[in-house]
Image (cartoon, rainbow, N blue to C red; front, side, top):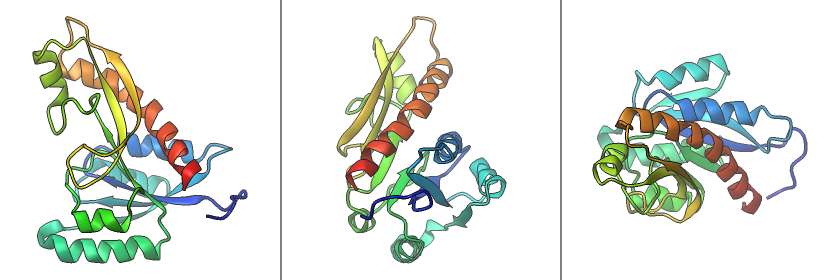
Length: 194
């Protein structure tokens, strides 16, 4: 990959399904003086995703994708991403599992942020499960995406203490603060090796 100058930033697509708080945070970091990336695309499987408002607010191209025919949709999506010169995909609350074939097209260039200390608590309801099992810590993990759910190589993690009075909601809010700190660092780390 070419050396970056002021205008030559790496193009990132962010995939969302909901509120887009990690998307908003990555956009904010992309505007930083020394940022090496720009958010060029927002992809969602949910036409009502609240995070779509950031596409309008920050003038970012968006694409709403209907996954009814996954094979065809993913094929078209790969072409669309390549046409837009996307070098890295960041999953941020994207609630779909991408196929092996799709992942292979962007091998080592898809990141996900997960609200637990992987390999513990893959999948959903992570905070509820961690509290129920009386864990002392939870946290968040940025990892590479492979064909197994939440199982790719770990890039960065951040521990968060679980308090006795914690509910899944209170724990989720504290972990989200750490997600916002961790994701841009992980992106920077990956971009350094692209």
